[in-house]
Amino acid sequence: MNPEPFLQLDRVIHEKGRLAIMSMLAASPELSFTELRDALVMTDGNLTTHIRALQQEGYVAVAKSYRNNRPLTTCSLTAPGRKAFAEYINLLEQIVRQTKSR
Amino acid sequence: MEPNWAEENLQTIRTLMERSALYRHALAPIMLFAGVVGVLTATVGLILHWDSPRAFGALWLGAAIVAIAGAFFIVRRQALKDNEPFWSPPTRRVAKSLLPPLTAGMILGVVFTFFPTTGVVDFTLLLPFLWALFYGCALHAAGFFMPRGVKWFGWIYVGSACGALCLLMAIQPQIEISAHWLMGFFFGALHLAYGAYLYLTEKGKNAA
Image (cartoon, rainbow over all chains, first blue to last red; front, side, top):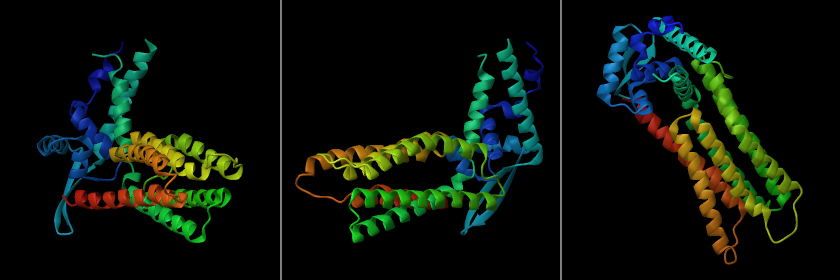
């Protein structure tokens, strides 16, 4: 089996919590912090840590605004984030193909 | 490491992406619209006394077509607003999972409506329960690709259809009930309640 795709997997995205966040954001223009937290059943602290890690890598953009006089935090994928996610999916598909052809 | 972990990861990613697709935003207006159609149709049926199998079936099958067409229109409008494709893979999956139970319900409806048999069983009164059961199954199947609440909403239909049928069988000889009332409850009131719940909770979630 060719180990190359395994070695190329993005370690930042590969962690299951961050992968779930990236997956949700890849299918939606933007999601609020609360929507992500509820959909993924994460604690506020856990979600904040993962989002910060993705933000530091430049994969996720966080915007703070107000709606109906209440603070609103929204997250979205950046262009590098979308590219990294697409590459990650391609690698997973390569691994699946390799596993099936064994 | 499990040999199929990559495939499982891909499946998880697919499910998560489908759950956050565009109809998430369109669910509350769709439910409210379907609820209004249900209540209006029940009101028309009760006022005009369209109780014969043919009149009942034609009225409610027509209402189902209006509700489905309206739902498509709302999702399409949301897709245009969000600049997203309407007939995307997630939408296709939801449509595919809704199709078998809804088709079965529609075929049974046509058969009971246009080829009614005379006998001890009043099929017009049975149809609301059958339709609610099939609709509940459809929602439950679609719930795998939608927000988790949709699966629970499907269970509410299945549970309330079974419960109401048992109750009706117990009280039927004493109390005559119009099938329009049952349809108004299942497809009007329940939709309106869920739509209002979604509307209020989404509003709360966005402001965080």
